[in-house]
Length: 119
Image (cartoon, rainbow, N blue to C red; front, side, top):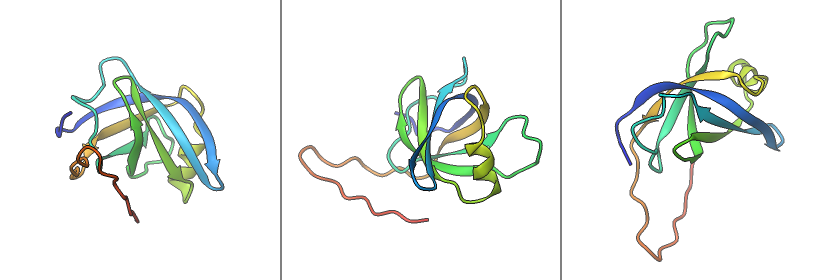
């Protein structure tokens, strides 16, 4: 695991609806652009569509899964930027920076964690 952040690109493998107004996007790192290590709990990435016709700000996304091939996010379709991301096809490319943030410690063996979040 690494706390250093890096920058790269990833291709969209899939997008699917997980609840009304929420989607899961699964991404594979493009060759040579994986981060130095997997993100820790509490980390996030910022993403930006590559070759997007409009200049838009990066959007922060907390990861919901990660391995050495790629990562996934569950996000709410809330405005123009997330609507544009939701409309991107498989094979679309996103620029990412991460992992960012202040990770928290994993629970001790045998302990049951409780997560409360908001934004």
